[in-house]
Image 1 (cartoon, rainbow, N blue to C red):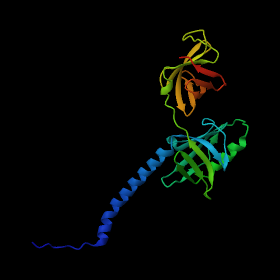
Image 2 (image 1 turned 90 degrees about the horizontal axis):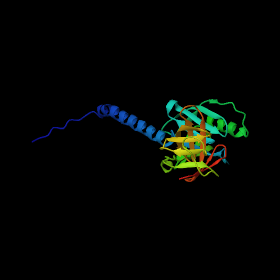
Image 3 (image 1 turned 180 degrees about the vertical axis):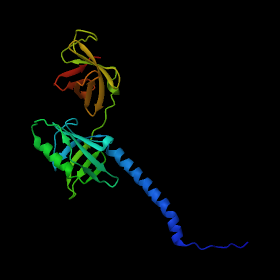
Image 4 (image 1 turned 60 degrees about the horizontal axis):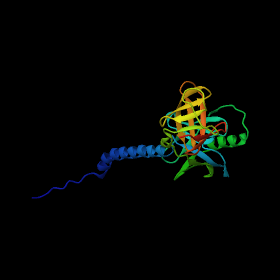
Length: 240
C-alpha cells in the first residue's frame, strides 16, 4: 500500500493554531490573576515598616486590607480610617488611587501622611512567604507588611470570662459582668444589668464584637486562652 503525503502550507497551520494558543494564554492569565488575588486580597496585613523605618503598631491599628468587593483598600495608621481604590494584575503591578479618610485629629499624624504618599507612589508589589512589600517606581521598598493569621474562635466556644477580681456571674440580672462565647461567631456580653447578644469576629490576637441590636463595637485583645483585655484596659479572666 502506497501512502500519499500532502504538503501543508505552514502559514495555514499557524493561522489555525493561533486562536487556540490565544485562548490558552487568556485562561492561564485569568488563573494567574486568581492565584495572585487569593494570595493577597481579603487578608489583613500588619504594617511593620514604612520608608525603611520599623513601625511598632498592632494588627488592628496599623493595617491594610485589599477588599475584592469594589476593589477598595481599607487601612488604618493608628487613628483615621482610610479607603483607597486599587488595581492589580498577575504581573505584580499594583496601583492605588486618591481615597477618602475620616477627619479625626490624631497624634503622630506624620506616619499617616507618609503612608498615604507611599500608597500613591506604589507601582508594584512583591510577596515573599507571609510578607507583602509595596514597591515604588525606583524599586524602593515603600512599605512592608506581615500577614495576620486568622483566629477561628474554636478555642473559646463554651467558655465564660469575668472581669478580674470578680468571682461570680449571673446570666440574668445582678452579679459581675461576664462574657460567654456561645459559638464561634456569637457571644453573650453582660455590662451592668443588660445581657446583649454579640456578633464575633477573630483576627490575629484580636476579638471584635458588635451588638446585634445597635452599632456598639467592643475589642478584646487575646493575651492567652485564659486572659482577655478589653479596649478600656480591663482584664477579663476565664471562669470555667
